[in-house]
Amino acid sequence: MNQDEYKPRIIDKKIEEYLSIFGAVCIEGPKWCGKTWSSSYHSKSEIMLGDPEGNFQNRRLAEMAPSLVLEGATPRLIDEWQEVPPIWDAVRHKVDQKSEKGQYILTGSATPNHKGILHSGAGRIARLRMRPMSLYESGHSSGRVSLKELCEGKITASMTGEVDLHTIAELIYRGGWPGNLDTPAAQAGLLPDEYLKAVIEDDIYRVDGIKRDYSKMNLLLKSLARNESTTVTNKTLKKDIKAIDDEDIDTDTIAVYLDIFTRLFLLDNQPPFAANIRSSTRLKQAEKRHFVDPSLACALLKAKPNRLLNDLETLGFLFEALCERDLRIYAEAFNAKLYHYQDYANREIDAVIELEDGRWCAFEIKLGANQIDNAAESLIQLKKSIENDGGIAPGVLCVICGLANAAYMRDDGVFVVPITALKD
Image (cartoon, rainbow, N blue to C red; front, side):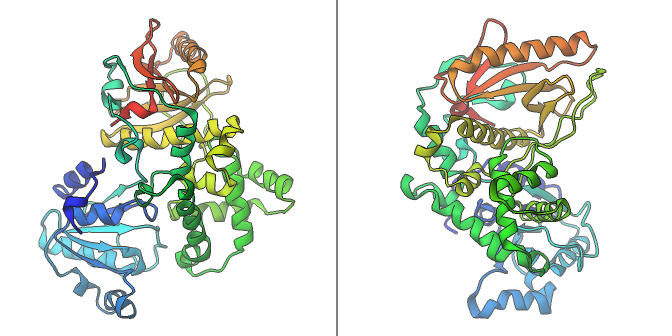
């Protein structure tokens, strides 16, 4: 690759850090999110197992003699290693032999069955998760506010510029795909649409070689899109498919399909906050449903920007997904984790970021600036409830907004930050 054309990614620092610690690094994530470009940027030689040249000669060579494809200047990139699973053990063995750091970078867009992989690679091969671009990476956020500093209670008040509703809808529709950066807005939905077709028609079969009912998989994907950013159960997904599409699918099949979608990095659910906050309040343990990028939900719902503007409820859920995608990317850059909060007292927090030392921060996500007051009040009341119940309350309260034009701290101590001003 021409390194002068490389667009920096937040994960770059993690890749460099892991290469200095481990013998090999495996970068996993959905197709087309930029794994190969980033890995190539950090490598000195490479082999592409998915290259069709010479009737897939690279793949056939790897199948016949995995050790041969490991030869080359290090760090050596082995792209789409899961096409030949024995590569994993070959890399692990080579790392053991040489006892050097940063020997290999593996990339994978699917998690293969463990068949053919003898060793976990623990201590030798570290895993990193890569996602589509955040708004800061794609150039759609000014980066005036650092999430890391915000979680420390620090912010410099500033005007961040006006953002209109159509721009927000277009950012959701376009998604964080590097290949979509320069695509005209009218055609931006083609890439996520083709992505889904590739997954359904090819990638799913290649995961384990089993043919499945593509029609029912499509129905489940559409139901997931209708329930984006919610905590619906598998039983609710089944009922949704029956009610909307007049088709039936059993919950066991739903569970199998969801596992496949997860292994293909199509889904990126938000786990529940499970830290011990020393409160008697019981926390719910349902994951919040997310696609790896909200543009995929748009593609399944056939929701172009103009249509989203006429359905503000759906736009609100998709905006929440956009924000939580970015919050996860930014948080992981400084070893923090993203969760959501629900308890049996019917209190919720859209996003929770837990820091390495156990402190946590609460975020409400609102599309319109007219919703900031209610969101701030909700956060304050929940904090008081946790404190009154003897629990450890969040150290930072913040409202992430779509249409706000400034980043600041309110008189009540709640921060307000536009998503188009945030970075890691």
